[in-house]
Length: 110
Image (cartoon, rainbow, N blue to C red; front, side, top):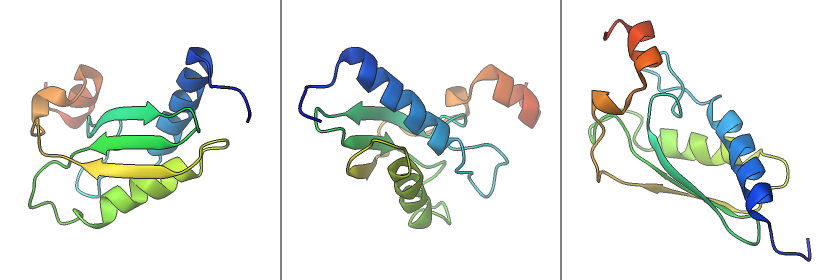
């Protein structure tokens, strides 16, 4: 691409990345990482690269090493995306309040 991405193009690419992320599930909870609230931010650069900031349900999560890699692989499968980096953060820490109400209902938390 030799033109800068428009805001709409970035938004479309981000939506497509979100759909890919919805294929990655936390093995302890039957909900994908996006709908569970583990994805804090997705940034798209002018070069179509994606930076994903995510957390885990706990620092002691048994998939702390594998889940971010699964997120990276899923996002990289998005057509048109360039390089994908995943940053793991604990700030703010994950809490049940981050889970959308419809997912809480499904999990029996409401």
